[in-house]
Image 1 (tube, rainbow, N blue to C red):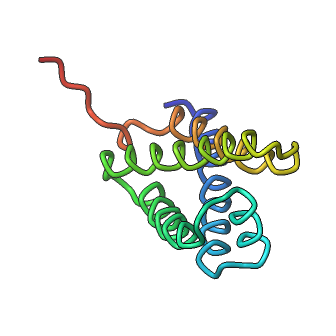
Image 2 (cartoon, helix red, strand yellow; image 1 turned 135 degrees about the vertical axis):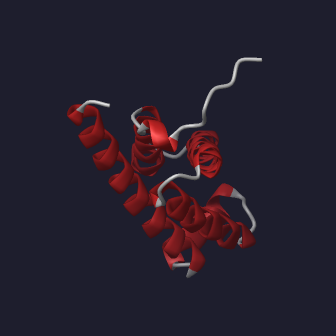
Amino acid sequence: MTKRNKIIYWIATLWLALGMLSTGIVQLIKMDNEVTMMKNLGYPLYILTILGIWKILGVIATLLPKLPLLKEWAYAGFFFAMSGAVFSHLANGDGGKDLFGPILLLVLTFVSWYFRPADRKLISVNL
């Protein structure tokens, strides 16, 4: 892995971790803005607890060394959560302000996943 790729990986991963951790905490404590947004999107409020817990666990998984299978699951979870957020906002007719955060986290998820070092990847086995 080149030094450039390592730098890209760590910048994307740290920003992704910060974004997921902060939104996870906001969802867990059920801040008024999050509650209003979920009601506006038509989701039950208990989804905030589920998303908050899984985001925080995903951050831990992506930052810990090794555990490549767990990291794959975390990245997949981030992708599903953020792409679901984008489509939910689009279906609700929300504007760019509501789409910016989920799209940014979706891009950071992809960049972090793509540039991850070899020891953070699953080993490919040809059968």
